[in-house]
Length: 248
Image (tube, rainbow, N blue to C red):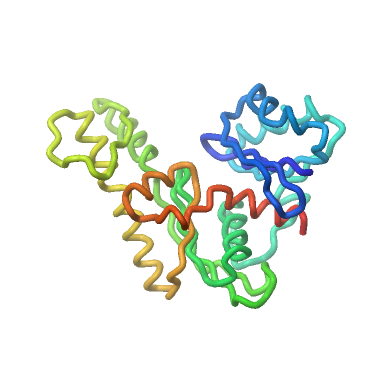
């Protein structure tokens, strides 16, 4: 059994996997106590940690925690001990985007658009020939990166200190708001989904790809905005990619 850890910007995603099968999934703070609690029942069965580096602070927390509680067990890092296949990625492309794209090709076995609604919302176009075992026949065609709703709001508050930091409201909110807090929250709730939809429409037109999968911690706002259908959400897509790469 492997422990998979995706060290994102705002959370650490943990999963347990046997072979290519992901059995459990949790989204946690980068806190050693939470990490230990998450694996408590399965600690004796875990044989190694597979780490997807992202935010370096969260990656360091996970590495230090692992060294303290499982010092005799190995850790393999995606991009180092586990090499990424060459699938048309550009230099400096986020490792998480590559892993999620490969996982989508494995699952869909056809060309697919991948939307990962994390701290940043990434949209990628992936070609797969439908016949070969990925990564053969799999290629990244290009894509877009835009801020998530909460990231937009944090940036607005940072750039305009007179404005408050608020949470996005739902996409069904009224546009005729009569307070600053509500006006900001409603605007982001109304506007985030269409912003992502516009990017998806253009990328689909340019690539001819019609199939889309969605993942990420902020995907619910895209579902509420009717940009994403719930049956196209793959919550553990990156974990599926990690399990596949580690087993391969």
